Image 1 (spheres, rainbow, N blue to C red):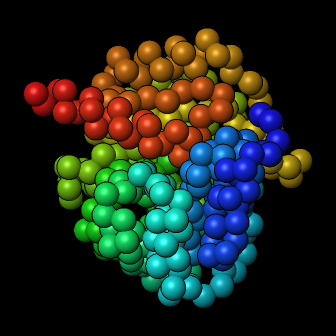
Image 2: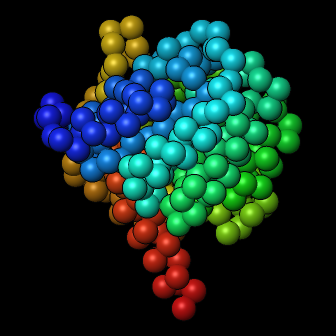
Length: 283
């Protein structure tokens, strides 16, 4: 990827800085930031820059987070308006320190965007709300257009890659979204190159389909620093294409599988295709 240098990139950066907001594009060191920001697309990360989890793949800082900013939902909504976004992705750090895991804050952000730009479609990429009874319901009640929660990797690697999470809890979370509101699209993603096998990846696909997940993303894991989990291997473009074909055969409505695929990469375009696919199936 080329280093960012476009006028659009610097305009997006200025809007984010002016509003005092955080993006996962910066915090996670996303390789697509230059391309996305040049088009005015940024993924907002709410509830601070510090996560209460310590996943071995993630570049977001771990520690004791600051108190929530009650004005953040309005700031995000204003930034969405100024950027002219037709589709926005809002994610967050894990906030195990909060009684509801931050569910109400995410809900407030969804509602603030709806008030400011009612035509903007909203995708949330949430934490797992582990041991936070009732939290999921709060987010679903705010009715995002897409509910995303990433499984990240195969279950056999959770202990070393995602030690604070539980694979089947995350899977159940996605299934519950559909039970609570079948009209919401669900989405999940994994990384490859962490030490998984093809058979394991295909099993994760089957698990996701059992939970009625609509949209799958598969991208290449890139090691943020030497302290993070090592890259075991780089998957070839042909392997990603094979995963895409297998996923469609298993019934996913939309699949994005490539080395640079990330949860929010081209999310707006993919959502538009996803909605068109569903309408075509219903007609």
